[in-house]
Length: 173
Image 1 (cartoon, helix red, strand yellow):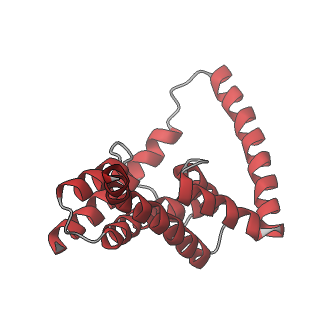
Image 2 (spheres, helix red, strand yellow):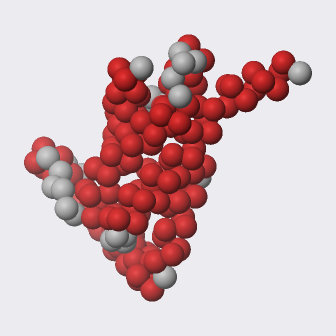
């Protein structure tokens, strides 16, 4: 059982960092193939892995983690025409102004960001990746990020892990 929980934690972390695999599908598959594992433990392992993976994006958006050098070089390489560079500069200024306005709104009312991120962690809308990056950019407190994310993800994955047993009981009537 402990091995399956560690595997769940690892896959949840991996799916948070590289979102090409659905942890939800893995959780449903694990619960249906190994019914002896407690649903709460599966939910907790998946939630911990997801929040740990999203923490990397949060810290990178906040500026606490530096991206690898090859990403910086690729981002700043001058391969485009002058017209294209001017267009990008104009769009970057526009985006920076929008982001500064959003950051100011979040500083004035921190509960707005906590609520948005909490809803995203629970139901997935708006996408968790987007709200994670936004939380880092607006400098959400790390403790609020961790508590809100863990609470939302724990409820989400626990309900998901418990759902096959619930549906099986309903179908027996």
